[in-house]
Image 1 (cartoon, rainbow, N blue to C red):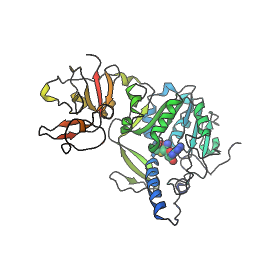
Image 2 (tube, rainbow, N blue to C red; image 1 turned 90 degrees about the horizontal axis):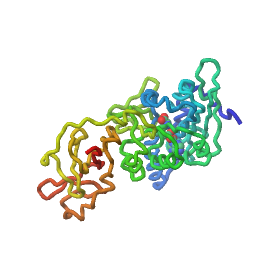
Image 3 (cartoon, protein in one colour; image 1 turned 135 degrees about the vertical axis):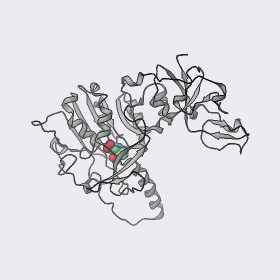
Length: 372
Ligand SMILES: C[S@@+](CC[C@H](N)C(=O)[O-])C[C@H]1O[C@@H](n2cnc3c(N)ncnc32)[C@H](O)[C@@H]1O
């Protein structure tokens, strides 16, 4: 069955905005449903932000050679709205793609924010049959209905995943662990967007540690702009509404996560500092020195060092070994110090203040210089 849903779609531009982000229905709520709805809406709102074509282009240009003859799957992408679809359909021939598949999620919970982004969960498969020189839009290619809700974990989506060589998208952040786990279990190549802090998750960190996943290339600092639905509250600095009423927010800590290698990942970090005992403090609950800035890593220190997670922007697996993190290595402070001398919380490293109290550190990665 082809082209079940035409939805007046002409790619990105002509899709009426209200069709993609319709106004939520008002309904009578009890306190319990209100609380649940609030929680779910809050969670889902964090998932509803749309990647700019510019950010996609800036990253994807480093990996062109991986795509020849490959099936690409964007499994969190409404082909009528996603710039991932737009990027791959526009560059289909240039990249030498074999096939492009995209699927779009439809929440089954009517109270869920984002419900109605699509009336149906849909998918699209494109094998490059364009007419003339024009780039086909989603409507021309033919959007087909999925029988389920298009959840990336559904059997239908999984069957499409199994056809794919490379998965490229910005997945829902609230499901990042499960999302990555599915890619790894299915042994897929991937290039996806997430928050840099996701690397500290116990499911994600071992992938970094074992060089099965690393940060991409194009985002190393600052924030990035994402489009958000119409009813998204935009109060934060840097958010804006364009002339057509589309809303945009700026998000900090964004990174690409990938298992596609690129030469820059093997460039070694230039180190300039020499180790002097008084310059680096040792943690109270793990035997390592704290190096609060990556550029201050001592050139001649062979033992474990705790570094900020932004170190991974500069990490070369030939130069350093990742031993663990403060989450995996720190001893409970209750074994080290008396209650009241340190701020309690989950596993982290602590530095002595010198007056019997201890300072709780941000998450740290523990590394060792492999070349010494
Ligand atoms: C961060 S947004 C990014 C959308 C699009 N990939 C982009 O970058 O423009 C994540 C998308 O995943 C969708 N989504 C949420 N839960 C999902 C699920 N379980 N399966 C598939 N997609 C889901 C959301 O509706 C949302 O549109």
